[in-house]
Each structure stands twice: as structure tokens, then as C-alpha cells.
Image (tube, rainbow, N blue to C red):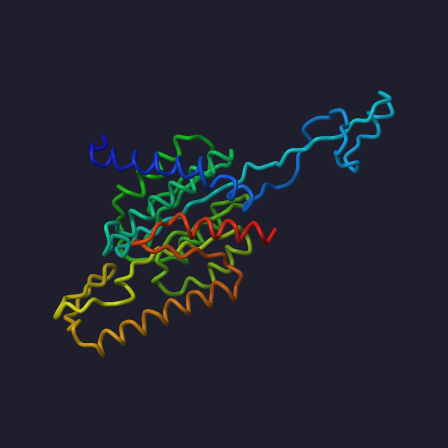
Length: 291
């Protein structure tokens, strides 16, 4: 039984995602991620302006009138939404935690898949596989994805992105579009990400919080690693300490971006204090131009 507050939250995210899909995003998504090819639909009479290359000469010769072949895009893509539920996902310095934003993104990608008649599946992971739902059709998948991302209680707290990617490579027999939603704070996932990107169309969706890249000046504060539980007392009013923290954090971000770009891995940067729809739209438009 879902408690009332969770139910209302799921409902709110579902409605917002549907609205975005119906008013803004659907066309860009379908242009960015195309189907496997064109499927013959029907033959109809030729009208001026039609592409003469599509004329069906057999039917034309048999009937004495010009007829052309009509095709439709063969879609039914497999969309996989993989969400990192490690301890760092419950951090957030703005009004939303990273896990809340991840749920919104998972809902958006699921709604887009369902509206386009694609299959959608879900993987929840930490340093172990927490839950896997293979891709399938149906609007009920949207609700379930949102509910699981928001309320699932993982048994692990660490992150092993490589393990999750290797699992997906084996679990998805057909080519899929894989949205990997994580802060990508862990190490050692590079080889696995390159491998799955060769097999599937992979998009790294980085969900980040500003406070993970710049400390506020609030005096002595106890900082805790959300995944290991380790704590450290830090004087955040010390400009030198804040500068070192900022430089190291920015360096980590630069290394991540450089890896994505040099290996042709699509990526989207999402910040918890800014609307996620704009970077998603920019990505879809960029993807469309590549076709």
C-alpha cells in the first residue's frame, strides 16, 4: 500500500512529465532516436508533388494509373532507464534531492517511450543490482518506474557503475537506448561504458548539485561521504580549503566530460537547482542534427 504523500508525489511527477511530453518534447525525442528503418504501409494514387522514386511500377502498369508506395517508420525501440540509487543520490542543497530529479528524468524518458510506442525498462543499482525490469510496452510502466525510483530502499550504499553496465550488456539481447542516470562519482566505469556504448545507444545523464562542487562559508562543518559513511571536520570559512575543494571538484568534472567527448558517449548535465527540461531538449536537438 502506497502512503498518501508518496502517491501524491508520484502523481505530480507523472502529470508534469506527461505535460512536457505532450507540449514540448515528443517530436524532438522521435527525431533524435529513430526506429530501425522504414516499413511498407500501403499503395495510394500519385498526386503532384510526390516523390517519383516511390512510384510502384507494377501497380501502375496493372491499373493504368500512377500509384506510389507509402512507408512508415518502424519504431518500437527498447528504452532502458538505469538509475544510480547509491547513498550520494539522497543529497541535495536545493529544494530537490538528486534522487527526486532522477525520478523526474526517469518519468520523462518513460513517458516519451510510451507515447512513441517504444518499450521501456528500468534498472536500479548501487554497488549491486537492486531491481531490473526488462523493456516492455504499456502506460503502467511509467507509474512503476516513478514509484520504484522514489521509494525503493536499496540494500547497498556504494556505487559500482561498471557492474551495472556489464549487467545491462548481457541482459539486453536487442539494441537499446540506455539512459544512465548517475552523478558518476565512482571510478573504474570507463571501460564498461565504452563497451556498452558500442553495443547500445548510450546516454550518460549526470545529476549534480552545486554544493558538491563549491563549499559554502559556514565555519566548521562535518562533511560525510554519503556512500562510505566516513566523516571529516572541515573549516569551510578557510578560503584555501574552499579553493582546493573547488579546484578538485572542477577537475573531476572536466575529466568526466573529456572522457565522454573523446569516446563519443552522449551526455547530459543536469543540476538540481535548475530545470532539467532545457538541457534534455538541447541534447535532443543536437542529436537530431547528427542524423
